[in-house]
Length: 161
Image (cartoon, rainbow, N blue to C red; front, side, top):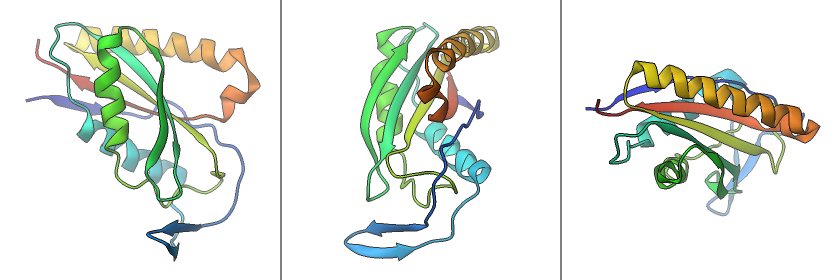
């Protein structure tokens, strides 16, 4: 059985307003979730969706996506990985996310989200991959001011080993 570990690394949001979204052709009014509650809910969902690939290798993948008008992830793309074998299970985990609505306060339409997903065969590899991902995130954040408006979610899967 897979041991799923959930954690959130960082969340830097652009400002925004409103709590109205369209669902199934109707306007729905919903109470906005706080950022921390929303991150926990989506991170749990990511972890539930994350399957360990059939490989003895550890690594990570970073997947970008947006929230469509119906609350489902859209424009899903892998932007970074340690090994391409983690791309498919990472994209699948994001694609299978339950409805992202209601979004947290201060999230604007067109907000870019990033899921950082770690795959580890043991605790040592989990720590090592987290450190490598942290370095990649520091480089990403330093590369552009626009990168600081990306909402980042993180989850990890521990595979056999």
